Image (tube, rainbow, N blue to C red; front, side):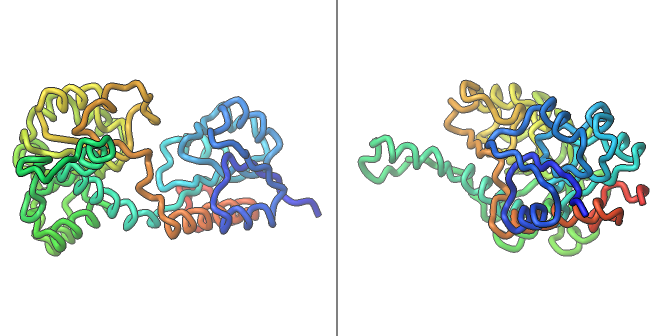
Length: 325
């Protein structure tokens, strides 16, 4: 009996890739850069399954090009890249990998906070460039973290984990903005739910952990940045389009806020010639918050298991559109 045919848009960790390769007739895109849209469209024309990444656009025309497609498994927690309604209308199951990134992402978000507050990258570059000559009483003065006020935008799983690190580890006061109250954060950390203006005005650190949607796109812009403290640090490990990149550059250049540390940008990757790279008070990482062996291996296994379940005509262990059954 022939194996189901699948296309995998990038090499994923072996623990998941082996499951896919052993159980399917799999073609795996070998390049570092993602396959172009038209290539994906061509590759899946006769496929039963697709294992995609967040960088792959999966829309209605692409799905129409694959009449045999049963399942799209996303190697990601998010699924903004997939037209889920279009997939559902075509009875195609969609899977994701929720819950595996919380600790790794919140660890890295706090890494960004500490590095930004203490000007770590700036100081390291100073030393590497040969400028370090002596201990300087006023060299690289940064922001205090212990006892400071943390403003969390989006008190979901990662926001809660960030609050845990901030309050339990550094005795930080927690403010949060969310459309829904978090009884757990309020009970466990004494967190206070406030409106966005209050959070921006009082927080020493503003950390973004909200979903990307119509209401959060451009949430951090010229107006909101102007409401922050001049000594404040902005941290974004959620989604790039939540922050207006040009407005952030101007705010950092002009001293409207003290610094920013980001794992995501808009666009992504940020072109090397972008002026944000020229600012010493801006740290930019290449979207690595989930990059631990444990997290990525779990993601790979979950993505593979979602794919294989869909190929068998079963509900996925983690299915975005459970109405397709």
